[in-house]
Image (cartoon, rainbow, N blue to C red; front, top):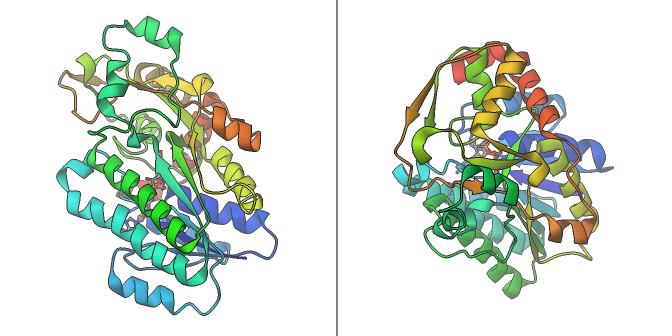
Length: 346
Ligand SMILES: NC(=O)c1ccc[n+]([C@@H]2O[C@H](COP(=O)([O-])OP(=O)(O)OC[C@H]3O[C@@H](n4cnc5c(N)ncnc54)[C@H](O)[C@@H]3O)[C@@H](O)[C@H]2O)c1
């Protein structure tokens, strides 16, 4: 089986490439990544050790389409991990985000059409309505919010605004469905919440668990931003290994279970507020750092997000295995292991 992983030098793409190469017998895995994320160079090096070749191409370009069309072997499966995944950046550089997130999907669908490839798309919880999520908790105290643990399922409103990032991801989902309808392409769409774990080298608004740890390791101050600056925003965290094992299961069943969209996340047992994350980081690193407060809330920020995993469980009996403690610990281990190289990059 030939598996193409666009965005394959990113955190999720490279982890998946290595995991699947090891787990699926006789699989050939290739990646396409323009290394626009500076830490992707490190992952490209790692992929080489597993004999996984990366084609350094901009997936939004016509040139890339030409080059991919020249691959002589049939591409059986495309796992689309290509994106500029920063929600905040999508405000400032919408052209770049449009190209990397949506135009790239269009090019990949052209490749899928020629090869009759199946496609697994990595989407996001950010396709859901910002206002509708935030209004769920508007007049509820932080304590009650935690107790209620309201979960978001696939039917939740996708009414705009969803952020420009969310818009490009939702549009990619719709493009995939159109191609599937016209050309009988089998697809799966997974809307992930926050993913973290071994190998994540994150930034403030993309990969905040590893960024929090990194700042603690290096004693760099952090700002609690928005909703009063108390650090009360809540997210549920999914481990990269749990994500990889789900995709492996989905690949093995894709002829039977296809053309579905799933929410996938850490769920209520892996939910954490920023303030609680600080405590974890202090315990692991034994460092206490300065926290600043920025009261103003970004118009793209969510108070809260916890995934409803019912649909994914009922289709695959898939459950979260790794708990918060382990995820945070393993993220810490990988930052320490790569500390020297990361000093120049983060
Ligand atoms: N990490 C998360 O918490 C999370 C949550 C939900 C969804 N997702 C989705 O999962 C996917 C992977 O996310 P990630 O965390 O690994 O991000 P990442 O930034 O680590 O990886 C994305 C990769 O895509 C590459 N890329 C970007 N634009 C490109 C282009 N035009 N041409 C070629 N390569 C390009 C980058 O160089 C990078 O290596 C994304 O589609 C993202 O939207 C991630």
